[in-house]
Image (cartoon, rainbow, N blue to C red; front, side):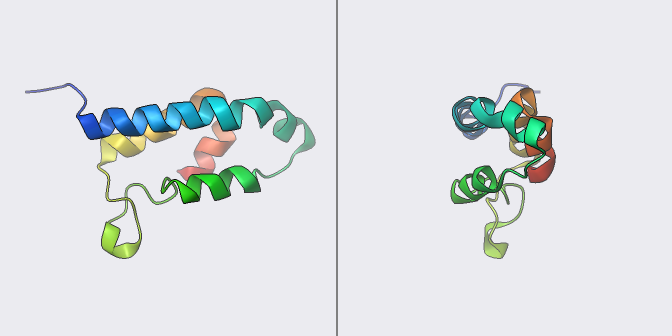
Length: 88
């Protein structure tokens, strides 16, 4: 049994990690303090195709596997659990 991540899974993980560190982390505390919904972050996640990552492409989703989805949620939760829950 091969337990290594596929190239696609690594790419998703890297993309979401970079996004989380660059776009979410800098505003996470402010959003939480001001109790604001992260509309701009959600819009950008949608543009990257991450809002529908586990759904079939024929239905407008990303067509990625369940592990890619879990990796994306994990990377977002690492910097802001509320953004991760919004995507989940």
